[in-house]
Length: 300
Ligand code: CP
Ligand code: NVA
Image (cartoon, rainbow, N blue to C red):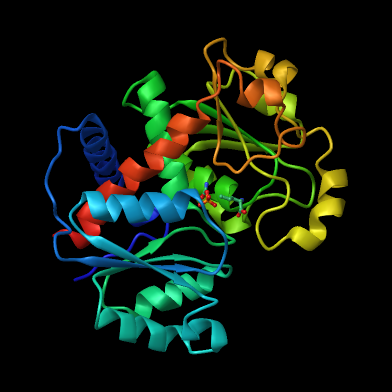
């Protein structure tokens, strides 16, 4: 039975900890197996990418496999071939699919019709590989046990915020989200997390940051929201991670950002370039976490 990774709760908590432990072994160099030998990952991109594309491609290679970059501009999907046909055709050639697209429903449909594992490389709703890499970065900083770790989310209730809610739900994080009115996270994802974890939503960034061990933000306008950029610039005034906001967090707090970042908008240059920033460890951890996911889904 093939398995997918479309959202963090797809895996139980124990399995998520196993994936993170495997990612750490991969990062340390201790793990040298090549579970993807002779296997191919297809990477469908309907949006731009630097980290996701390169880390999946390099990761597949390091595990002994191969990756093919499939831009929707070049494959028939972009000319209207149905997702379900694309899924069934690719399943005849390759061993796994990573997809980055707009509607999350498209990824669900792809996974339903594919007989091979599907990995979500970002949708408008979720960005699970990124937040699992972020969680690994937190473990490196504060230790393996994630329960009760205090995480602040400052800004848009977007795919990243929704995935943090899913991480809170599975790992028992204490998550404080500060989002402007009208830019809150997905209500169903929020309610599921709130039922199982200590999760709170506020409109005050300083309140969310108070005592946080991790301060996290993202761009004000995500991919596909370019036309809203000006309205968002107005709505997100004050949702800015600067030195004053970091001073409200715990003294040993770290700053995370999935990147790409807009300095002077959601984050001040002095924070992202400062001693508390872990953004490049976070970017590196994409590689290790995704290798662990590929080994689990495609290597067995
Ligand atoms: N953080 C992230 O997913 O980066 P890319 O858009 O460069 O893949
Ligand atoms: N929220 C951002 C994340 C980019 C990695 C976007 O969807 O564009």
